[in-house]
Length: 136
Ligand SMILES: CC(C)(COP(=O)(O)OP(=O)(O)OC[C@H]1O[C@@H](n2cnc3c(N)ncnc32)[C@H](O)[C@@H]1OP(=O)(O)O)[C@@H](O)C(=O)NCCC(=O)NCCS
Image 1 (cartoon, rainbow, N blue to C red):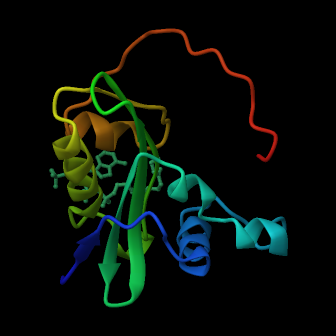
Image 2 (cartoon, rainbow, N blue to C red):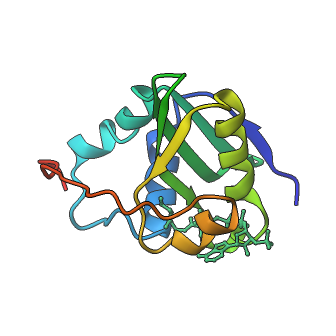
């Protein structure tokens, strides 16, 4: 499998949407034209981004909010289902951690808990308090 990794934050909206659709994070019914035009805004405004490509197909992505020293938070790690279990998710996270080796790394996940434990994350029982996002 010939996968190329990139660090551009400017991921194409349509390709990112297709990836989010494929992992069940977006729906064609509820995504408006206006939302599609700004689909990559979270990536553009993140501290850093990595993406995985097979030719011109976007097959994986991840974005990180980080102070580049103490704390880094992972968002939107996704790999196309037909490309999963080939080490792409692991490589995307490896590249993120390499950017900021001494940082604490945080991720909030339910379904991907097994994946993160496999690559060295440990469950932390701290309480999480939130105000929900207006958009989802
Ligand atoms: C989670 C996800 C990104 C993993 O990507 P991936 O490319 O399939 O993962 P990798 O192939 O790099 O897996 C690395 C290791 O973790 C294991 N693994 C992958 N998914 C796993 C899971 N859900 N539970 C347990 N282990 C898992 C792999 O078998 C592999 O083990 P190995 O090194 O012994 O072979 C992918 O399943 C995905 O996109 N899921 C849907 C979106 C999602 O839930 N994202 C997380 C949001 S925080």
